[in-house]
Amino acid sequence: MSTNVAWHSHPVDQSIRAEQKLQAPLVIWFTGLSASGKSTIAGALEQILVSQNYHTYLLDGDNVRHGLCRDLGFSDADRKENIRRVGEVAKLAVDAGLIVLAAFISPFRSDRRCVRNILPEGQFIEVFVDAPLDICKQRDPKGLYQLAERGQIKQFTGIDSPYEIPETAEVRLDASTSSVTESVNQLLEYLFQIGALKSGYDPISLSA
Amino acid sequence: MSTNVAWHSHPVDQSIRAEQKLQAPLVIWFTGLSASGKSTIAGALEQILVSQNYHTYLLDGDNVRHGLCRDLGFSDADRKENIRRVGEVAKLAVDAGLIVLAAFISPFRSDRRCVRNILPEGQFIEVFVDAPLDICKQRDPKGLYQLAERGQIKQFTGIDSPYEIPETAEVRLDASTSSVTESVNQLLEYLFQIGALKSGYDPISLSA
Image (cartoon, rainbow over all chains, first blue to last red; front, side):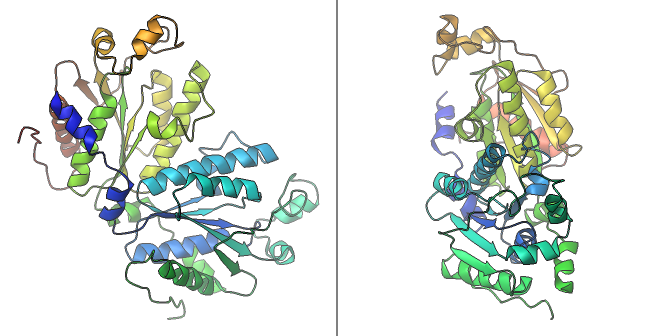
């Protein structure tokens, strides 16, 4: 049937899906220590983007560790495979035309580089959520640092597993002195500068 | 900061993402033998849905076997893990508010059931692309059946690995007598009946 050929000759691809959503798909990859604020900032940014009618998706430990990666632990090899899979999912999600926010400790430089390398040029934005270990330990919202220091959790980043500070991050957020609002505004400003926001943006103000 | 609480109290979820896209997210899961027409029909349906401004994503071997599942082969265990991961990705994609089309041989009933079970009630539509083995062998667009019969490919579904016919498929397409156009129309009719298409549909006609 010649009709079959017609279907195949115009498959739906990233550009069609992105155009439909009036946006430039990309991955905004948040890396940083546990309790640095990655998920909070990513979630806040997502809310702002959605309120401005961007089509987003947020990937984090909550929706990955219990599903796609539930067979993986926290050894170096398993962390590597965890980030590899998340990177592949992020690739599929940007192929779907979405703006993907990914919030993972992702402590190893080589793993973050692998994710960058499988994505189309310019579609990977690395955001270093920079908060000193001491502050993260003080926050410790889930008591994980305390458990790790007692040895009740092994291979915890910052305690007995290393965190490799990004050398190539597009954005560094000072998560110890900036509020969530300030961090989100810094990211919106950056996204606007690189042309990822179509019609500018209004800096958010949570006190309003 | 009280603002952090505000962010967390209204996370973006599936219902917000779906509402933004004016659609009911779901997974349309095509199962059937190699060369039965799964990918062709799924791709054609996707084109029609996108032309009517639905937000879709197509998962198939092409975008999964070289990426997320490139560590997997075709043993029973690897096929199971392949479908498990694809199911988890489909779950994330419907969580993103998308209409997901998944085209995989997925020969084992238990694996398909697992995917159904991890998805929200009513968001998994199993479509059996039913074409007799003889016809698939005749079509054999990639010459895979020929290689399998010569023993040059092992564990090929229908030759030396079983295909378990669906017992619970929501839709059965007779892919030996129906054209791609007819199959797509049958699916559109079904999607309309279950309320997944917001404002009806026009049966497609490729000859027009």
